[in-house]
Length: 309
Ligand SMILES: Nc1nc2c(ncn2[C@@H]2O[C@H](COP(=O)(O)OP(=O)(O)OP(=O)(O)O)[C@@H](O)[C@H]2O)c(=O)[nH]1
Ligand SMILES: [Mg+2]
Image (cartoon, helix red, strand yellow):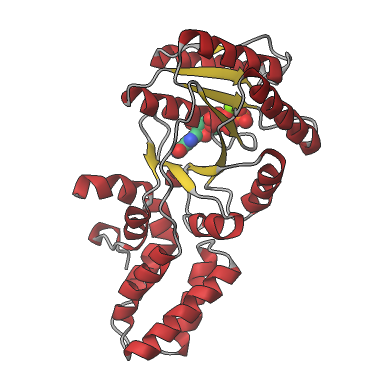
């Protein structure tokens, strides 16, 4: 029980220190006043929940405080925990409808795609699945090398071509190779940066189409890796990916380096996409299935060692 929560507590330390932890401490023992609501609103906005969601949450809290006759701020904390938890969806189970199941991993440059693919490969291996990686980020030589290094480290085959080659062709070859080997899952690493965003989206659409030619129904999942440190700006980018390539789920990387854990709420609300996993570190084992209970507890828990005067 503690272990389960500990990873989340550590991973959320930054967010807790800058915003939510202050909230938890600040909801000490006083009477609820207009100031309480103003402060709460400011804090939630600062935590990157977005204005709409913040107003919504404060309104829900006010309503419950009225209804339940609550007068003390310390009782607000439990209520806030409940209300925050209710805004989050449980992630759907991940399905593997075909062999190979093809998962396209997309996102802006530096968001954490390649590292996340390594982490996913590790996780799938632990589940006893055969994995293959496709180096469809052919834009930079270093990107191909980075994936190869991970492949070697994890003992997972990597299908790659020359830098500058067609990403669709690499994806096609990788899927064909996986079919021949009886591989369970193909993870396709894609580029995050091209000359313009228009080109990037067109390229990703093409990769998508080619995957479907190599195997009907592919890609079975399109996962968007978002950088948790980017805050609200990332939402616009995410919408562009969602429209262009039909994103089916979000992986929120770098939650451990972020003070903006409130992004989690905004992503679900504004994008209507489930958060499937979160990145809680740079190592191959630092990927956790999104757990709304652990997340909300990790955000609001007060740790005595973290209390600052
Ligand atoms: N702390 C932390 N760092 C992470 C996490 N995920 C990725 N990173 C780091 O973020 C940096 C960028 O990660 P990459 O996986 O190379 O990102 P990318 O999206 O593939 O980048 P491009 O290929 O350039 O588009 C690396 O230094 C990673 O180690 C995470 O969950 N936590
Ligand atoms: Mg990469």
